[in-house]
Picture 1 (cartoon, rainbow, N blue to C red):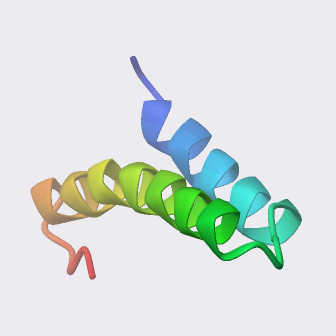
Picture 2: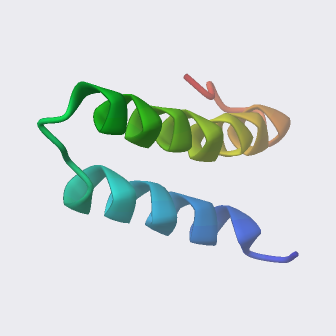
Picture 3: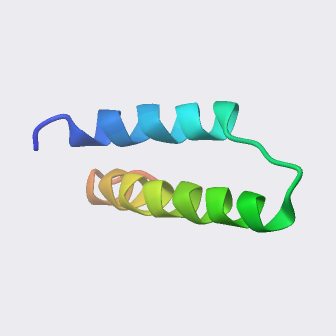
Length: 53
């Protein structure tokens, strides 16, 4: 999908800013989602010749 990276970045930012929990297991789940969103973003950056970290 052309521009799919932008959608991932926007989703990552939204989840990071909106989803927070005092319940440890819920926060762990949120962190899993954030990592799942971050991985393809990093790969796209690396494929474009940038540091993806």
